Image (tube, rainbow, N blue to C red; front, side, top):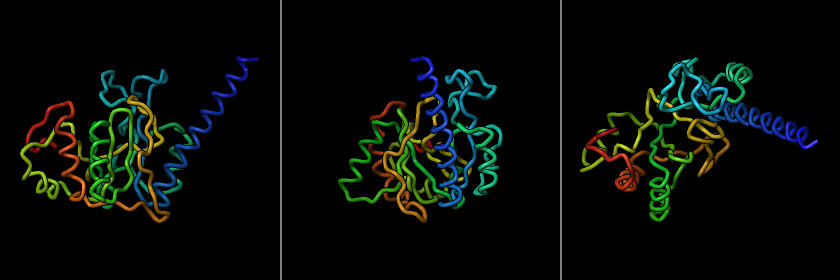
Length: 220
């Protein structure tokens, strides 16, 4: 009997996870007009990446088929993708009118949020994985970002910038790095408010200077 109950519980959890992935993709695409696509996901064993690269450094957390350029806000396409791949990660195609993001190690992210809160800076959504946090910001160009970083003496290589041509994995996706969650949930029915990159970049650079990975000038 315990075995039967265990199977039923696992089935309910899988069904709930599948509904959550589709619901998240539809909310992003149809309500907020954020272009999304399914990520490659994990292999059948739940450990490695489902892509052909046995040494993939971001297992499950990248586009494969479809490619990033296929990202869309079309409801029919979203439903078709996640009906066929119900637990695929939800990937946001950043930039070009969609939100951009800056990500950093989790410990540095917590320090940065505390510093920004103390300064009264209004923040938008923040994505958290077990190892990294990502702050969503208004669209920016790499040229504008370069101008902001040029004056810095040191830009840690642990900072990563997701602008046009990039992507970001969104909750409640699960990747090789663990399950993602909202550290600061999106607010606003018409679409989450997003801060300008200028408002947060100084605090993120400062918080990341002591994070692992070292750093180099303009390493973004």
